[in-house]
Length: 518
Image (cartoon, rainbow, N blue to C red):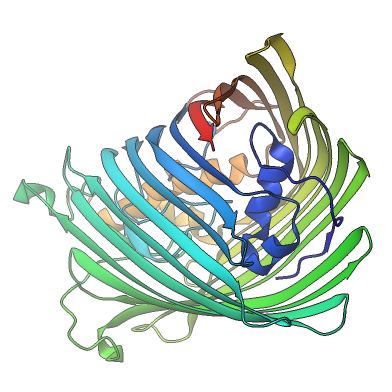
């Protein structure tokens, strides 16, 4: 991970209230919290309620047809007179999935890739009820005039339940990550930092049937399978499993603080080792005979920020982020690598913020992104590779309605332009001669028709997305700054698609939030 940060000294401090400019910066700088020491952000606490809903057919086939989330979230930064800085965030989310098929895993796919390439899957769609708790907090404190120290803890717990029809699934996810580091002042203007992280994750996945007749290979649309790549299948040893992950990371930082600028550079590396077991009744987690598969992703990332004060009330930024993840999967009973995946993402964003009396008046952004994703299933000899370039923009303007109320309309848009697409599935001809009682083959064929083919078309289709956000700011009353917003977005392909139920599928999103800053 690498971050470049150029800012100013002795400048007016701000909060992320009512603007994308600083909200994006604070999110990006989580990779190295020492960066909070050099950002022009004043003490704040944000607490709010949120609701989101999305639906439509323009999606990965392993994502629900509709989703709803609502919950509570809070975050903030506080630095006291002794130079000790506290930061953290908390969110509690309740969510619902409708008609999720081919995915009994603990996460939804992103850019065509699953968090784990081996997971339980079933053709029959089902509805899910989920709950998520995410708690993160840290402290930066001075040891003496030259040294600062960092201590941080991140904890995530969630439960997911598919309980409306067979097969019924229950997933429990527990993750705990520790971060610690030191920051040292080399000279009057230069600083170096070192941060290390270690985390562990435990996941249990239990599936059962209320109707024992459904738990039969002949009912192949209801009979679960191990999906072990991108088209490969195997019969499960049991209808339950457990996973145990470990992650280790390191970040090295350098900061130059001079006159009205400071430059911050962070370089890091993250490695994960993810073991999945044949069943959930494992006494010795180190016994490789109980392993079903091992997945080992490695991530390198680069994040940059140039932050400049133009005038007392106008500011510019140039934000850059990039990451590259590569991973290989080994099925223990097969030996050798059975699947590999990689993803590269790069984003560049130019932003402009104009303020008046500490509040955002104009917030503009113009950027471009690039994504390349590739996965290879060695056993099935299938391969999917695609890349997109993504120009985007956003614009917000504050309009005063009366002395106590402001209107904040915002528009944004993005175009996803397909640059490259390669899809190979040499064994597809086998599906033309499947016998009626070849239930294993019928499952593979159904996955090919409902997931592999539509996804190949999805990730080759250039598309556009637009959003409108309407916000209201109730100005400070008893030191509370309140924002309410509703947002709608719409996404659609430029061309007709062949393997979707609708030739012009779309995806819509609606959200509403109430946030209070104090």
